[in-house]
Image 1 (tube, rainbow, N blue to C red):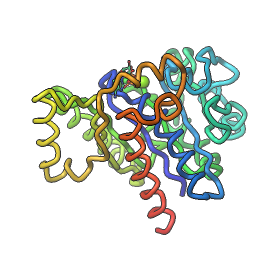
Image 2 (image 1 turned 45 degrees about the vertical axis):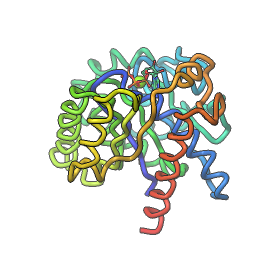
Image 3 (image 1 turned 30 degrees about the vertical axis):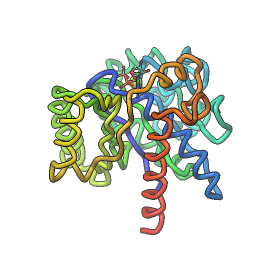
Image 4 (image 1 turned 90 degrees about the vertical axis):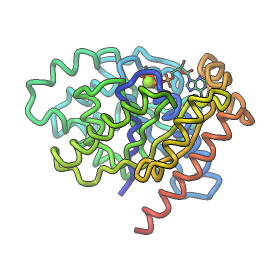
Length: 275
Ligand SMILES: Nc1ncnc2c1ncn2[C@@H]1O[C@H](COP(=O)(O)OP(=O)(O)OP(=O)(O)O)[C@@H](O)[C@H]1O
Ligand SMILES: [Mg+2]
């Protein structure tokens, strides 16, 4: 079964999109270097802000005919083909494919509220398409919205990026509760929390160090720590250039940290392949 990673946190600006976009391109590169027969990775952007679509494809003006919106609005039986038709190749790499978001997704939540089975409108067609890929990664919007629920229902692995601040870690509890609620309440036992990613870490800030060591020593959360990404100016320069961090500045501290996360995820994918 292809693993589907969802980057989620209802808190805004915690580096969900930065992490999702850099990790997908990192996965493609590492899988290819490892000689994988199929290194293709699919990025699904569910946020109407479309930041992930913009940096990876150079556009964010997708609409009724060529975006995730199109898939959600399609007839049930046509949805898998519609999903395939809406996928575009990233400018970053031919093996990185993107199902782009659209500003129209803002209204889609309202339109879909009344539709029976609406929460499954991403997971159902994705089941047919995911086997074409080595992994799928979903970037979500900063809210517990219908689209985030749809994303959790389509996922096997939730990764929660957090900033090392007090309120962020309080928020972490509610994200974990939400994920557990989807797993149990929506009967989606395949969904697990596979990682907490600490982002924008500034080792000079005592509060950051304190929170990181608290997290590390926590019995449950400590085991979930997937990586620590340092605060690094190269991140915003890479965004402005619409480049991945690895292409913009492979030796930047954040690039090296994301590369480590990618290594762990590739190892995880291998263990799941064998299972
Ligand atoms: N390691 C980092 N160092 C410095 N700045 C960073 C880092 N990671 C992300 N940023 C910056 O933080 C801001 C928010 O990042 P990003 O858009 O990835 O967060 P997000 O969680 O997707 O936001 P939203 O909730 O709005 O979707 C951006 O301006 C980005 O450039
Ligand atoms: Mg984002």
